[in-house]
Length: 368
Image 1 (spheres, one colour):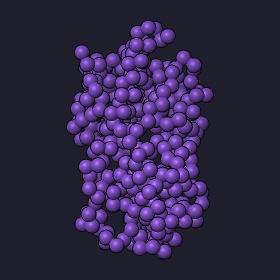
Image 2 (cartoon, rainbow, N blue to C red; image 1 turned 90 degrees about the vertical axis):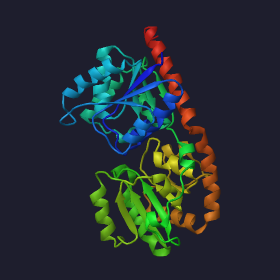
Image 3 (cartoon, rainbow, N blue to C red; image 1 turned 90 degrees about the horizontal axis):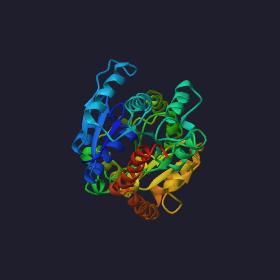
Image 4 (tube, rainbow, N blue to C red; image 1 turned 60 degrees about the vertical axis):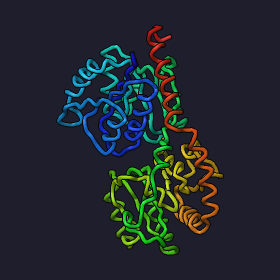
């Protein structure tokens, strides 16, 4: 019989964890697993998830804290009969982990960020408590793993499995046309893709773009949504940049935009393993990134321009350097592409297969 993994995740919105699950489903199915997913809401990654072979269990809930979610999860476990449960994001880290514990199913906890994402709050303390009951914690970066190194009992094994880069799919996508982007071919494109949240440091990026757009024929597109969206749109207006800096929200077909871009900027204050950067690497798009551990784990000075994320002038200098010297920028992008090839779908799903089987066997042997 094929082994079954049940993923528990709040929904399939446009975030990185959701996108990663949609990519992994197809690879895990291809190597012999059945993939089931329990979720409350849909979202832009749901169609890809289903197309990649996952069986979706839609859970009824009036709101995020509806106690019925736990009972619905228990029923999803009964229906899918998983060999292992994999939980992601706070709601399902708590409820999915609890459901797996109640059913006696081995379960793993995901880490998608790093220490600075978790201030000392009641929710984050609860998160640590539930993770300490997991059969393992899987982080997508060494920075994420370092967070758990000092917080977990020694009996809980930790693994680092990098994010998937769907290179073959990305290679089949053509760059976005002028009709699609609304850009003149002579206009250069600076692209940001991600959540509009404080750690993404968009206020500094917009400050840098004020100078970049004054010195070059540039349009910047900040693609995404999130809690800082209204504030960033207001800042763009206050700086008189509305004709040069666009905020279109979530963009479908983002790989085509990345391939059209002259540079992708990721100047986050901290990260886990950002999908946008990985996908830019696979697309051959030049990168300007903040000098933080998460970016250093994926890139080096031969493959990207690194900047101090607190220095808007340094960010502007780096963006202008990439735009003015496309030959050097292209050479760095080729180096980044070669690094990304190590994280293809099949390479990463084989790592998950190894970890899942090890955890299942460990539980059978009584956790030794």
